[in-house]
Image (cartoon, rainbow, N blue to C red; front, side, top):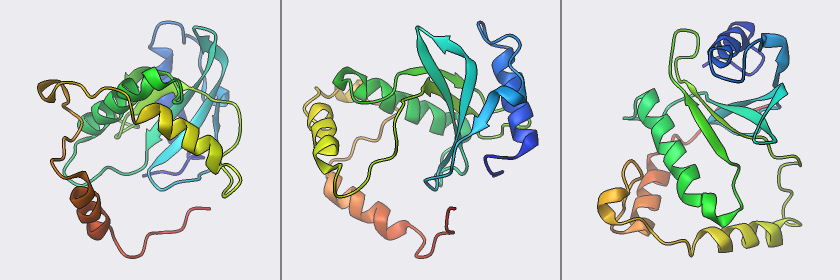
Length: 173
């Protein structure tokens, strides 16, 4: 997947956004690639537009988990945002940008949160507060949990996922 500064990706993202209500006139110049901090997503700040008074951000998958299509992965992430939203500790989810030529993995349109990435160990109290607000949220009924994975044994599932990861991942600048 192309990196955050790729001009073709920015042009495709701008075109996808410009087709949405409230985003007319969005150009690639109004998308600012944010520094890459993780392995899975690129992030782009969208200048000059807000949704319900919130600045917006594009969350663009760089790679997809094994076995999931781009559309399924976006639906999975959107469901995660929706489940955690009542905690008040996650960005607001606004929309899915469907996979398309130039944006093969699609994107999520979410609230842009001002601030900085956590710094450890100093920010552990804030992380703990957020997790403490998310974890007691009621679980949806089993039939309503899809597309989120419903593990009978979450510890074993987490261990299996960890063991399936490549031993050496490319570094992120």
